[in-house]
Length: 181
Image 1 (cartoon, one colour):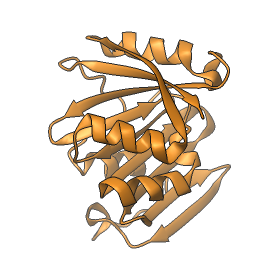
Image 2 (image 1 turned 180 degrees about the horizontal axis):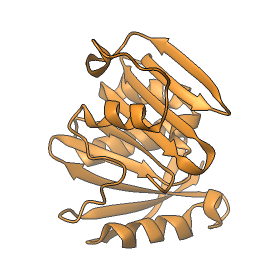
Image 3 (image 1 turned 90 degrees about the vertical axis):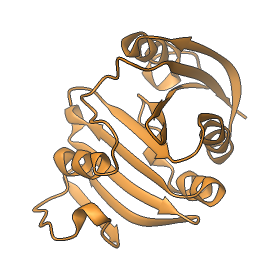
Image 4 (image 1 turned 135 degrees about the vertical axis):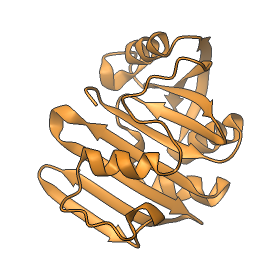
């Protein structure tokens, strides 16, 4: 899991997820491009996101389809920093699964949101653990000693989503540049 990533997954079409996320996060569309290679998409987003040294006031997201799931990912870990946006997004489009990891800072985040509420929240940040809500199905019957990157990834993949180590090779990746309103 050597690099920071965060992602939202929902069982809806990509356009619905992207439009809902832009509204929830208060962003507007600036431009888009597509890539056939995941690493090209990652490099594009890295160069375009303000948080990673790109243009001021701009964020870049990668989005693609994985089986029944639409996935929206950012490299600057802005997605989990706004629980109100996650609630608003789930109120608009239904259940969402959110995960974020950053090995360099021992940061791990998992949330399941639905009906405008955070139903499950697990966070490891600055050696503090936050655990709220009811366990998701993958947690039942499991004993977690701690919330960590492995726990978050195990919960994320329990929904049939790829690991954060997995760089999909057989998909098309759209990248959207977004600006704050």
